[in-house]
Image (cartoon, rainbow, N blue to C red; front, top):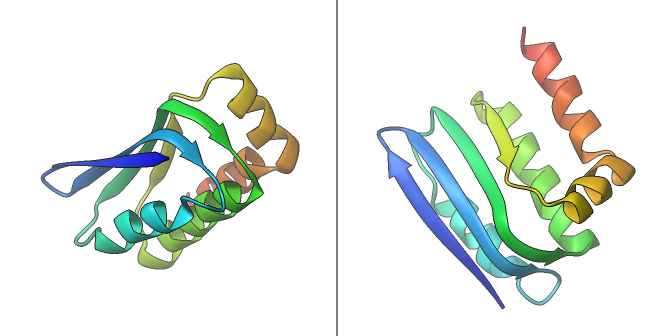
Length: 104
């Protein structure tokens, strides 16, 4: 089960991901991402995420690429050590860093 809490302040959006982000729950995340309009920046908060699989990681990569296509910055916050290690292992943080360096 995953819950996506969408908080918006002006044009800054925060998606707070709670629970498990996997093949069975990815549709909820994708739907929340599609609902975001008129974005100046996006933060994805993982502080209440308990598990993520490769399908969830793919969704995060899609969000990163969406931010590049639409020209807004994205940040990933609140990762526990296990999720941070997984993101580092599969290269999510390297992709984000490389894309952000390309913006400058």
